[in-house]
Image (cartoon, rainbow, N blue to C red; front, side):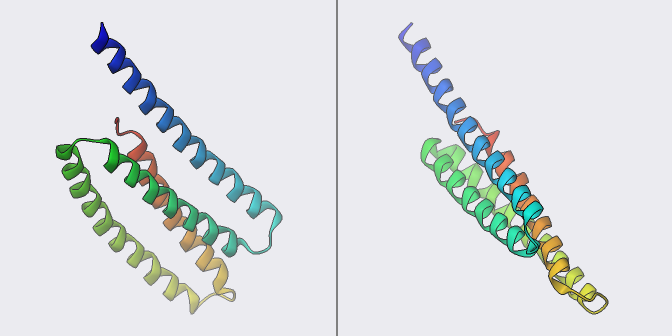
Length: 135
C-alpha cells in the first residue's frame, strides 16, 4: 500500500511538471502570435520567441537530468547529442537557403524571420519530445 501511494505521488508530480511545461509552451506560442499580429517587426517577434524556446528547452533538460536515474541520464545525454548534431545540420541548411534568398529579395528581414521561425519550430518539437519523457 505504501509503495502504491509513493508510485501515485511520483506519477502525479511528473504529470504536474509536464502540464506546467506544456502550459509555458502554450503561453510562449500565444505571445508570439500576438506579437506577430500587432507588430511590424515580425523578425523581432520571431527572434524573441526563438530565444524563449531555447531557454525553455535548456530548463526542461536541466529538470529532466535532475529527476531521472543515471542510466536514463546517459541515454538522454546521448539522445541530446544526436539531436544537437541534427539541429546543426538543419540550421546550416536554413541559413544557406536564406543567404541565397537575400540576393533575390528586397527585404532580408522577412527571410530572416521565416528562418528564425523555422528554427524555433525545430526547438519546439524537441521541447514537446522532452515533455513526453516520464520522470
